[in-house]
Length: 173
Ligand code: S3P
Image (cartoon, rainbow, N blue to C red; front, side):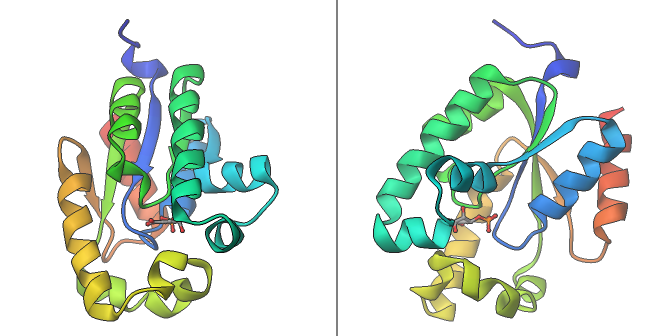
């Protein structure tokens, strides 16, 4: 069954550090919608930070939790703003559940501006801790292709989160 456009979730994807959570919160406020951050919800549900899930249970366990949580969220919720972890869209089932129930926005940034954010991210992102900078650049580029496919893209290099959220509100109307 098709979900009416105005009831669809607005789903934010993009690489770690693109600003999905900050922008999602602002966007939800502006639209008067509820905001959900998938990683924060997974942490609450399992009573552990994502870093701890990676460390003690491993990445595959995290990916399973991520899939279970997001697929169910897509089936059960309407009219929310949801930000997803940067790796979630690599899973087919998550992608198709989101594309069915939501309007997906890709927050896009260049590698150059991402590198400036690296230092703030490293401590809380296990994906970055286990890779060299060359490997991270490769991951960045390969994921960008998936993020950009069939979704609205918003460039976040130069605008403030406030400006980006305003831009998205205009785009949605
Ligand atoms: C991940 C991104 C993180 C978090 C986890 C794995 C990834 O979320 O889900 O550390 O694989 O890109 P953010 O994109 O919110 O940093």
